Length: 253
Image 1 (cartoon, rainbow, N blue to C red):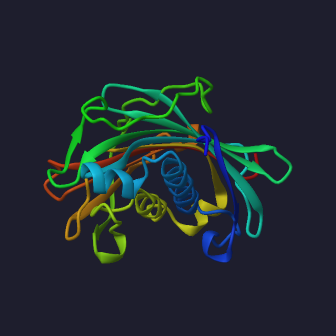
Image 2 (image 1 turned 180 degrees about the vertical axis):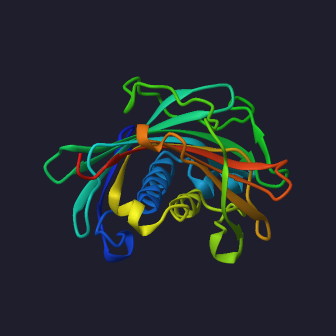
C-alpha cells in the first residue's frame, strides 16, 4: 500500500475531552495530536513499535506551537490532518491542521520531535540510524519559527506537583499533554472563564520522571498585553523541565 504523506483522522469532542465551559481542553487537543501522529508514523512503518523493537528508539516531542482560530466545543466533530515537514540535524518537524466538519480551519500546529535512545535516555542525530524517513512537505501550518522562551517579569511560585504513575506514558516519562493540564492549573476558574487562548508555545527541556517534584511558576506581568509565561523547575531551580508562553484574549473581545 502506498504511504499517505498527509494523514487524517476524525475525532469527536467527548465529555471527557471538554472543560467546565464545554470547550475542548488543550490537553485533550495534545492527546489527539499525539494519537494522529502515532497513527501516521505507524502507517509509514516508523511507528512506536517499529522503531522501539528494531532500533531501541522512541519519538519524543520537544517543541510545539498552537494557533487557535476557534476552539472546538463539546460533542463537535473535527478532523485532524498531519504531515512531515522539515528535517534538521537532530529534529523532525511535523505539522497539523484541525478542521470542522465543513472543512473550516480551527487550529494550526507546528511541532518538533527527536529520536531518543530508550536505554541511554539520549537524543540521537537524525542521520545516525537507517530509518527510512518519508518525503517532506514544504507547506507549513504556521509560517513562524518557534523560539527560545523566557519570562519578562517576576516569576511567582504557584504550586508544586510530584510526578506519579498516572502521569507517566509508555516512554517512561511524563506525557506531553500532562504538562498542559498542569499549566492550566496555574490559573483560576475565573481566569479561564475570562480569557481564551489564541496561541501557545511549549518547549519541553528535560524529562520529568516518576518521583520528580516540579515547582510551577508564572509571570503575569504582561497579562494586559495578552502574554502569560509559565515555567516548571525542580526545587533547587537547577533543572528546568519546560517553558511555555501563552497568548490570550478576553472572551468579550
